[in-house]
Length: 165
Image (cartoon, rainbow, N blue to C red; front, top):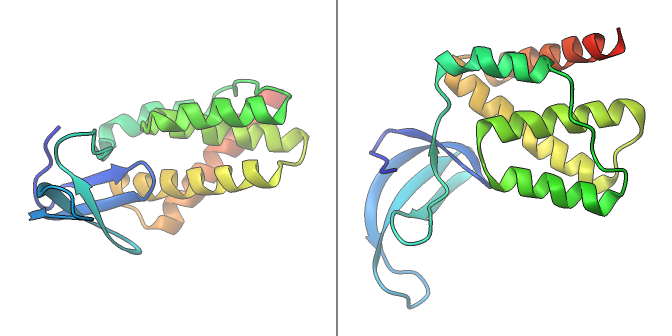
């Protein structure tokens, strides 16, 4: 999917940003290629336009957020008891880089933390997934990051109440 200058998008590792320009560049003595200059909160990332999938995807549409509100409130999917199996499964889900997968991982890891403490790696995974989720939520809904984070947290708490009834 081709991006244009000024498009908001999501990078799987770096989160929400904006395409600043397209530029032909050469890195590490490789061939010249066309890249997106992608501005994120912490700087610039150069993302190839062609070849391997760039990983960039369009920002989730505001009209789709109602569905994701329901997803965050919904009953979580139980995670594997074995830490390694759980981590592998979650990493695979996040590789998809979809907003839905990120919502599911945040919902499921949050619910898992209600019953037992998360390992350091699971805690870091949840923190990073939640940061990217909230940043995209804020951009899609037109909210501040603080307001988007509060909304996501409230939806997860609603889900917890539903599961405990």
